[in-house]
Length: 106
Length: 124
Image (cartoon, rainbow over all chains, first blue to last red; front, side, top):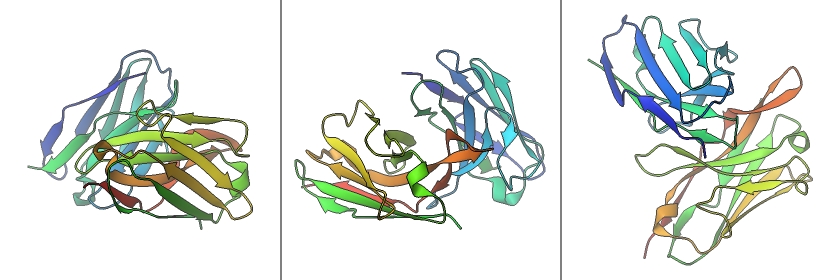
């Protein structure tokens, strides 16, 4: 099983700041990685797929990068609605999720 | 518009069974493999099971549920099912059905639509 490790567990930032979230895979997943946003009481929302492609309707402030084992989700300037939990997911070998990074208001 | 609506959750005693349903609409259900994903209270997401578009080719399960859960579908009813037997306390979670992303006609196993989830609580 491919284990995805996200860091940090919690990111405390202010609106307008840049957020950088990391996801590391236990073995290469090529670019077969996605990022999701989840708010309390809601289902996850797909943000990025295949490491760097924005899903339909996702604002340009969200960007993804990386390949192999190291991936990054960047939110260029945090809006109030961006404070949430973010998960990465791989589809290279079965399907697994990271444990999540919570982006909270500082 | 795509809709996925889960039902069938509830409180069940350890060792008992429960069947979840996911009613799909707004897309060609019979053309998509479909997944179940769960989330224990306050925890992260865990992939549970997948079934091929026709329901007969391929079914795969997470090790944590293999031998106890069975995924199935009825394409005539646009409905996905998850039969859960021998339930354990650690199966307590919100269960989501999820649809794979379609990019230029290719189905990628990232999930662009999710249901609202149905809560299963295993407790005596």
